[in-house]
Image (cartoon, rainbow, N blue to C red):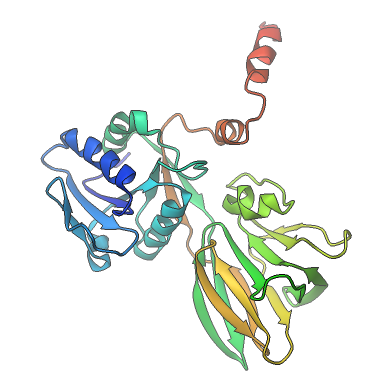
Length: 303
């Protein structure tokens, strides 16, 4: 297993909790042949260095071979975009509340990072969504998402309508608060709160989820990830819809514009500790019966 020599820590330098965590990590001496850099995910540039480690700009990220996010899932989502753009594997130290994506415990971060540097880790590819706006045959990519793409009416309190087609086949007209296209990674995020299913991250699929549908017959759907999804908001003159990529970047959609959603050609590569288990993550984060596994083991008869 290859080791890493150029490590980039990504964090919001305006968050003192994350900065303090990085300082603790940096106190653990990295070997002389390991280069360490810092990138500010907030782009505020309010700190130029941390413990004599330079805060670099985006043009220098290609020099690194591992990205380590420090923060919650929001920081990890930003790190994932950098990971895809520069084709660098990424992992995360959880300093947020839930942390489905950041699976390194802060209390064991130094030991885990040393294991990663020495090649003791497992890798996992994660699907990404690309979103394209089509107007009069002119297509413009507006970005990628690791979790989900959500289409909503910009004005709150009003129902919106969208039609969906998959690979040129008309599916349905949806009426409600909006519509979500989620990856398996995003199945534990916005999609889950709207009634979507949980998918194991290595399932190659998209989840289509209506947000608060007007009709109870309008249900979530799982489709292959090699599908092309066409979404057309039904808007009157002057009405505007909004697209949110991973709940962060937002773009306006106007009458006559349609949305094309595909999987990106290349996934991102997540790095996990050797003892990583996705189902352990689910049990921990969703508070599933933690004692049931022990009870089942006690009841097993070993032959």
